[in-house]
Length: 332
Image 1 (cartoon, one colour):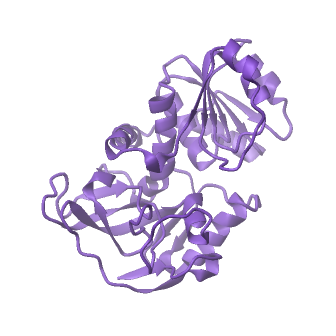
Image 2 (tube, rainbow, N blue to C red):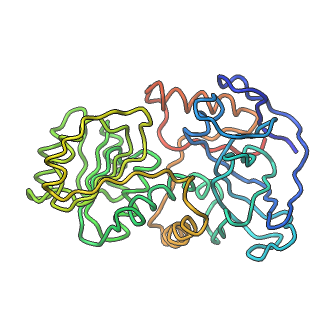
């Protein structure tokens, strides 16, 4: 099979493209013919060696995929040859990734791909959608009628948070960085959209909540100002953090406990298959109903994986603002 792969950590140009052996599914494993994969910031961190992960060399990067079952190993019960599937959690903890014509994975990490849902859309939503769902429902137990604030409402995770919160009947406040992104956040369902570059975010939140405050604050960026966050929270509000490994924000202890706030952190890839499958079940329903849509910014063939990684890094680390949506990779 043809695949993008690395033999040493480094900059994007360490990625090679060529022929590697097609994997053979073992017990409980499924071989997927990959139709689409998506690129996430964590893929670039693993490639660069910023995040240490056990990996066999040559290493194929990529967490997310969607495609068709090509073969199944002994004991597989949930899928059969010809089934359309999607999934995430590849390229982690020694598992090979998805930037290849074929990916061999445990059936535990795969979900049915509903009829009418494109492989590209399912792949684009995989990691970010599961992350959003875990934060909103497993961590904060979001209920209809509550107010959700999401910092970065058109990012990969942020746009999924907006849509899932609306599908649940919540009121959503989202920040964006441009007029174009503001319109997109409204299309996703945000009730209040605030341009953090030009608007008074705190004033907008107070107005939107009529002074009650935010019930669920979903922080998609490295947290820097807990004092502002805590001040804008409703009593017994819940705060989610899932980014910023080296962030060291000041923690205003008094306002935190006096309001009875809760602070939750998590990483998606540390969650169990059963926990993530519950997310996928809801995501499948919402994708079919049109309540959860992917935002795809650019598509590359696997042979241009190095360019895809550079574009992701330029925007994740370099903050260049040249990427608007998820990066998708397809065979070729």
